[in-house]
Image 1 (cartoon, rainbow, N blue to C red):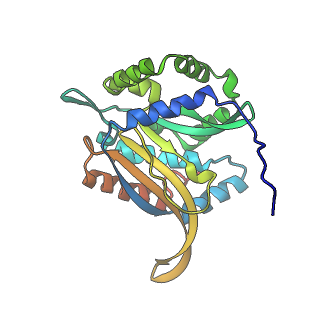
Image 2 (image 1 turned 90 degrees about the horizontal axis):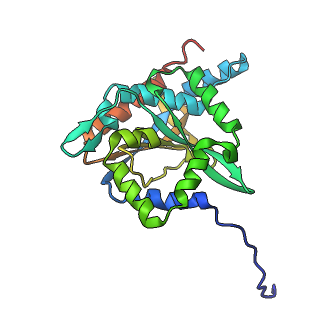
Image 3 (image 1 turned 90 degrees about the vertical axis):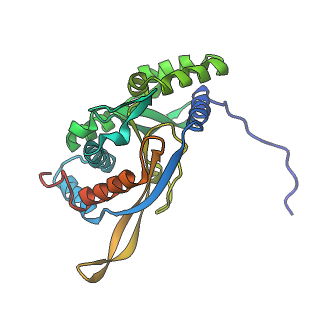
Length: 261
């Protein structure tokens, strides 16, 4: 029997983690509904693999942003925000996504806003993601501003969040118009995540798992991506959310945007 040990380790609680608590508190003011979907990404992944073999740098995350931007662009109410009795519906789809980085030896999630994804090419989205991955968080201006904000007392930070949630243009400037969280990039294959989010539309990207599916009346192994589509039910009803999911599936299934790469 192993003897009892009272030893332990310590590590600093990073100031940036206070932001997660603030985000969760703001999200609890929203009435969010979730849809769990599986999307066949077999052909899209094969097209990306062919492009990479030919020397093209194509990020799968960038491709998802590309098709999400196109699908939202067809019904921009999906990323609308309410201000009193008015819905503000933005022309550009700005995605708040996350890139893992290391600070003081600890992994953190670095928030990155990628603007106008509904008007961008897959190549330009890939280039921006690669650039963000190379940037050191400690020297990033957005990161420094986040630390300055997190030095404020908690009641004042909560007040700032309340102001943001009622100022759509300011919310878009600081947080984008949609959220895309890629938990599946580091987790096990398959599975869905249920986010707590203040965004009107949040896409949580789960893992990819191979399952049998009927294609052209034949049972074949297919790569299925698990996605959670979460919407603020005060603004978006279930039917538009379902149509968005179906359109997103169609775009990916038809390898939209990959025909020329």
